[in-house]
Amino acid sequence: MAKARVQFVCQNCGAAHQRWAGKCDSCGEWNTLVEEGTSGGIGSGPGSLKSARKGRAVTLTSLDGDIEDAPRIVSGIGELDRATGGGFVRGSALLIGGDPGIGKSTLLTQAAAALASRGHRVVYVSGEEAVAQIRLRAQRLGVASTPVELAAETNVEDILATIADGKRPDLVIIDSIQTLWTDLADSAPGTVTQVRAASQAMIRYAKSTGAAVVLVGHVTKEGQIAGPRVVEHMVDGVLYFEGEGGHHYRILRTVKNRFGPTDEIGVFEMSDKGLREVANPSELFLGERHAKSPGAAVFAAIEGTRPVLVEIQALVAPSTLGTPRRAVVGWDSPRLSMILAVLEAHCGVRFGQHDVYLNVAGGYRISEPAADLAVASALVSSLTGIALPADCVYFGEISLSGAVRPVAHAQQRLKEAEKLGFGRAVLPSGSGDIAGGTNAGTFQPSALADLVARIAGSKRSRAEETD
Image (cartoon, rainbow, N blue to C red; front, side, top):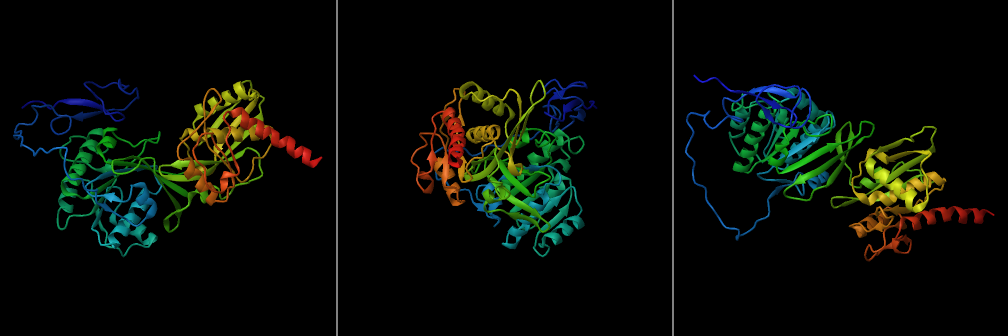
């Protein structure tokens, strides 16, 4: 009998090594190699399976043909349906990740109850909690009477045999994928081999039966979904459930969606009765705004198809250190350094002897470069001590030459600002036709120096009025 071959698989990137080493040669992480057998299943060689079956021919078709829209299962939770692109697509696999305790199980329990109350068959399989614990959460959320089918199981073959009994389920929730194990892989649950094999089995079931499958994934300390990155490529959609411990809101962010837009968000508010959807996130992020303080600018952002207004706060204080501090929360730190360099090089604003602190209010995170203009305005406002107009929004990208470049969706940003009572806007020139109440109060600088001069000029005009 041939001896089973052993290899060492990195739990961070999935690379296989012939012998153990302290450091993975592929990703550079330390102490991530785990011994796994390759006697069969994932990672086995071509000759490991004695009775390999003969392949069968599949039906080939052409590119030309009828196209049908993917049928969706609408949950009735507006923010969840928005993040998924209009509901769960039949036959699709969705991966949801998030920090521990952020509310992933709570959200999926509410979604399962909402779908079950609409007549859909929903199966909730938990590998981390007992059935009694899930029932306790359902009682707290007030959905214990809904016909959701529960199971506490971790073996993939047993799960597939269970849900195949009876009517085909419309939605299957697996909480979580790191707890599953399959007989095809000879390794411990949670390893790269088991996660990949279990994901393949559940995705294969979704594609063959037409049931929607939702997989819950743990995240690493860097915020990425744990396990091999190939799982994110295998599924049809990847959603991250985000939130700060000191804030009561949660954001469901779409980073991949084969059946809808990416970079879409759904906003929820955590309460003792579960998650409550927030229809207007701008009011939530601007709820505690102090309009007369210097260093605060309102940025009109775009998340997917939704405009969101958030407050950007800057504090510029004299520094006693040889190297001043630069601290950023909710934005890109290298981009702040770029904005500071442009202000010094092209506008004559000096920050070399000052500490700079930048914060996006409410714990919100911004990734688009359209926030450059709002950040620059907040920095100049804090340095000069001049409060910006309370009814003004800012958006625009700043180039290294000091020019203000146009950004997309200017009309949607202005409409959202007008709906919340903002009558003025600072935006790039050449943003297209501008309609609405903010038209009369718009300022379109072609260069960043024009905006700095306008902010500094407002201080002189106020001083003349007081004289």
